[in-house]
Image (cartoon, rainbow, N blue to C red; front, side, top):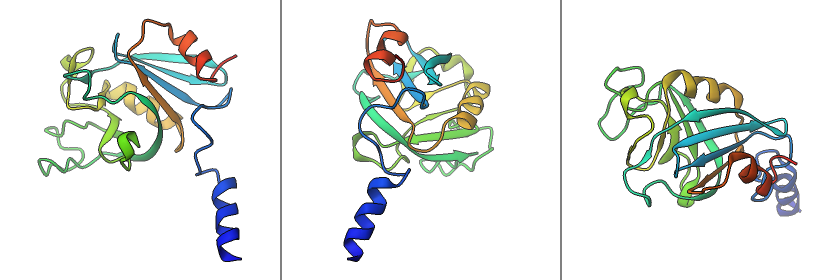
Length: 168
């Protein structure tokens, strides 16, 4: 009986991913590595487009549909033991982690940075970098479970959003 109740809870829980595509009206993020831009979609329309930086090579920033699973203000950088808020911390002021390649949201993410000149370039080890003010704005708008679609496409954000069910 306990297994049945737990299974039912997971299926109806808002924390459980509801398929690969968002529902129209739900927040959705599209990252197009071909042009290094991120589109924030909500309420059935593209709300804002941001310039980003992605992986040094095409395979470093994974493509597919993922879920936001982890968010942090002033994230700690484990690799070099640099605390959040330190000007040397390349993660900047916010971390929005997603579950790419079966990770938990602590490996791949959308984050700020301490070097704005890198935005627009292919320079990261797999994460998506944003300007500090942009990642702060996005962080406050997207809830856990938000879908992130990463692609390298010649299609417009509107077409990609429509194909993924985020807009009509």
